[in-house]
Image 1 (spheres, rainbow, N blue to C red):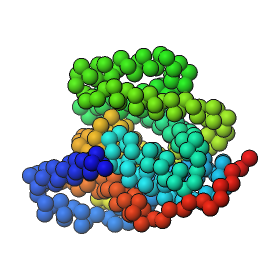
Image 2: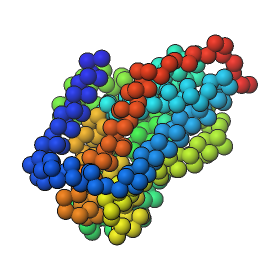
Image 3: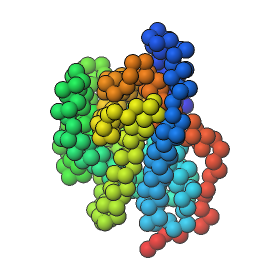
Image 4: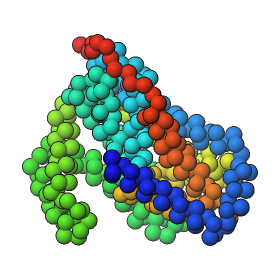
Length: 341
């Protein structure tokens, strides 16, 4: 509980720093004026994109759950999914979503083994799809942004590498357990010497436990190949909608001169960079990276309001809506558990 409140306070401090920057640059009056003058219809389009993202996220979880539990409805999976979105937003590396979803699913009557298997499959499909999607975008537009944004290549490589390392570790641990444990042990020894990690032994045990969790359920992944391909396709649509939020924000300011592909890929690159920031919601790194990439698309005085609106849609709405769902949405425990054979 203390850690959760610390993350929320850290997030609020980052938000306060952002508004201090607004006051010291263009001033709060110009900031408010820019917000008031946006095209509301384009901004509603951005909100629609995040709603579609939520819907597909819940749909993917629903597909996995329905493979075993035909009585578990979509409303229940949407509730579990949105609670996960809330905890993803307030924890470093979005690490809190899966554990709380596991808790919600088991409270609703799904066995812990099945809940773990479903969430493991869902996570792996998402990560693999994200890495492949990101690779295509990097090959497509890396040169364009590298020529226009200073040190962009380093940021893109770091963001992509973080997601790639997760996939590689999962693959290695499933197939080469001892080698992966040795790698993890060596990494945490380095972290301890550099004082990056306060409790290296505890964190090492936690990482190994999580990887054991994925290994135990790897056979389920291999036996549902067709379903996973379908889920991968849904994930592509989901990520595309999320990356398109930046374009809708851009158009809401009355701008139209830049190609949709450049705005779309810039949004994707920002999302990649955020994944490497070890703070709740990628605080700080998200604002800076968005400013770096989108400053060339927006007119003078528009970039800070654009950052705020983009963060409102992609982060604050997760906290607001996910928090409301966490508080008010009733639990939906299954009266009788009936699995599909």
